[in-house]
Amino acid sequence: MTTPATATTPSSTTPVLPDAQTVTAVTHWTDRLFSFRVTRPASLRFRSGEFVMIGLMGDNGKPLLRAYSIASPSWDDELEFYSIKVQDGPLTSKLQHIKVGDQIILRPKPVGTLVHDALLPGKRLWLFSTGTGIAPFASLIRDPQTYTDYDQIILTHTCREVGELTYGRELVEQVKNDELMAELVGAENLAKLVYYPTTTRETSPKMGRITDLMTNGTVFKDLGIEGMSPETDRGMVCGSLAFNKDIMAIMESFGLREGANSEPREYVVEKAFVGEGV
Ligand code: FAD
Ligand code: A2P
Image (cartoon, rainbow, N blue to C red; front, side):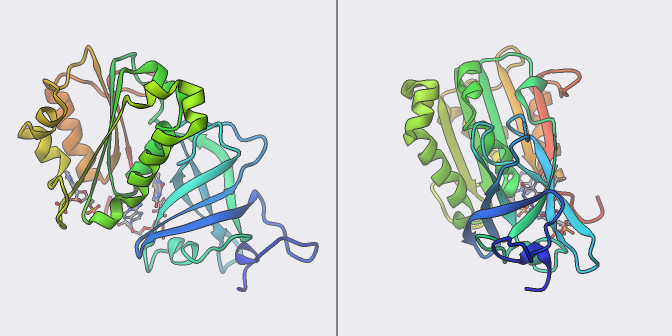
């Protein structure tokens, strides 16, 4: 390990990074996905669903930073992130090797549109995600406000393979069985959370793109819902650009309109990553 960013426990001889936080846990879910937790700056306040810039010190001595959704809830003492491993990615080719005790850089300026404030009040909240797009929703399903504001919360997660669903599936199980969450929102309210995972390239109990399953009515039939309505339904979307566009078109066809922090409406969208050529 040559850079300060990958040094282990900080000591008086270890150069301290600007905005450095210490890694407290790392879990590898697949060869392309991992999550990790870091210490939280005492002054950092954020709204569930927001993202921050995090990274490592580059070989040129300059910080190499990327946008990351905070996956942990705002009441957590630590911060959690859920990450892709891009083998030739400038940041994640290195970040995937972090270990407990290493340091990462975190710029404590949270921003984003996947927040409760950007939606008008409603009864049913849809959280639509693909891949690492589940990260902001990992925060939101651990936020007590989600359960007090809505009668039902439907988290959809579409991935190519079954293994890519594990982080989300374990998280939902954990939330539903978490004593602190039950204390915060009431055990009966945790039953409001409905998890709807689908895969597209490996066999699982529910196959297909969520967009197709909405268009052909399968999702609504499965959940016993008529469809979406601008009076009752609210949506948050986080996936690839193509996914976001397709889900937006479906919600618009039901009469929902895109909102923003400055103008709350029926749904909000954020890219899970910026693809090539976008
Ligand atoms: P980059 O040079 O940034 O990316 C190389 C290529 O890899 C991209 O062109 C794209 O095709 C692909 N890619 C990048 N990120 C992803 C991804 N997450 N899933 C699938 N393909 C990807 N990434 C996360 O892993 N977790 C997050 O919570 C997260 N939140 C984000 C929030 C926002 C608002 C944005 C804009 C991006 C977010 N990203 C997230 C993507 C992240 O910023 C980086 O792109 C990613 O960490 C890869 O960095 P890199 O330097 O290794 O490769
Ligand atoms: P598919 O396997 O049919 O492409 P990716 O890994 O390419 O980011 O995709 C993650 C998941 O999102 C995959 O299951 C993929 O399905 C699905 N997906 C990709 N694009 C769309 C889209 N435009 N609408 C719905 N689902 C999509």
